[in-house]
Image 1 (tube, chains in turn cyan, brown):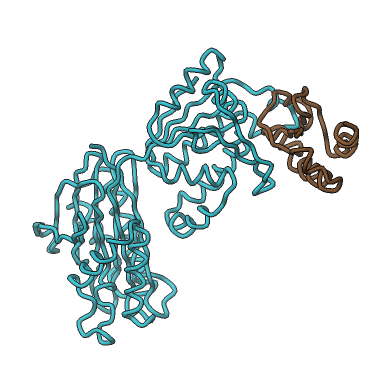
Image 2 (cartoon, rainbow over the protein chains, first blue to last red):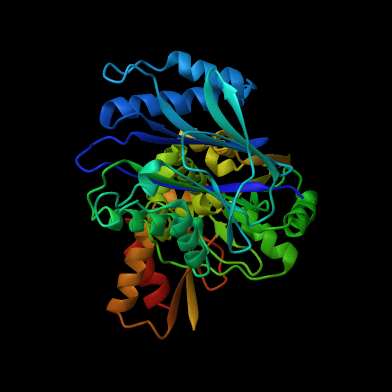
Length: 390
Length: 80
């Protein structure tokens, strides 16, 4: 069973602080997912610098194949030493999951990671070892589909300390709460949001520490196939449409001529609309059995522009909801691609003579170039991409 | 019911499909023709080299631009 991951996180800053001392960075590459959450010593700028350095170093080194020892040693040797406390310090939690479902977690100083499996929160069995005089905890396990790992900074378990809760919001209580809400909340975003809200409530909206919650869910691959541009040889029309139809998952057609080919081969009608949601993007159309039908180059170009912004994971998590509400073809396409883990492009190489005149925007004249740009962006997001030329 | 189809493919879109549709919508309303004429969008009708392609029922595509839109409507729709 091949697996992919879905990630969501939220941070709340300590009351009165402009910067968060917790930092989360993640990379979802075609080989694996690595998530790093760090909590820098203190708060504000100093903590922010410490945790940012920690996540960057950890993510970069692990990605390039360094061992956990080397990575931890490098972090310890690099972090600037706090003038007051005379130590360089940032806690961290690293979760790494490969495509085959092998999971490795290493934890230093953060509350233990929770695993929500079949409605129950499990405390993982790990081993402790010493690296450079620091005690780190390690866990190795096989994941199952729908497993959710939840990592949090100590700002969450300390919520309410000295205020409305004597001992704070303890691990076991959080686990119980998660079990309760997971019965009704099915997305990790809503789970994290509720946890984050509860944390804020215990702090009476004045958090005494930065509080961060990360959820990482194990999902099966989400397939999307995009057919763009008519085949160079019209004899291949049927072949490319069959290819599209036989692929599992969502099916998308970009381009008027491509849509007509699909409609003809499948003997189905194209339903169009004169309703321009956005005057700069041609309206979408509908073909039974196809999840999205859009115009070609203009829509693809706009989708590129939208997704360029979304490479930044911070933007991804803060603006996703907004994007979801946009109903134009380019935003819809962007949404489909963002939600996908595995994307196949069926690219026809026929040249549209109408795009080869001086009046047509130069950068749009070659559809393949736009798709290549799009593929570059999706590649950076860690999507699995396959391109088949026709 | 008769139909008037405006191409919204890439080329026609860049040449002003959006405005042509806007003008036609307004004209259909102005002349109270909603019961007789349906305004539709159409994907590429292979007449991309010319300005916005418009078809009346199953006619060959006519080329219409912003300046000629109203005259076209008078001739082909009102005069029909």
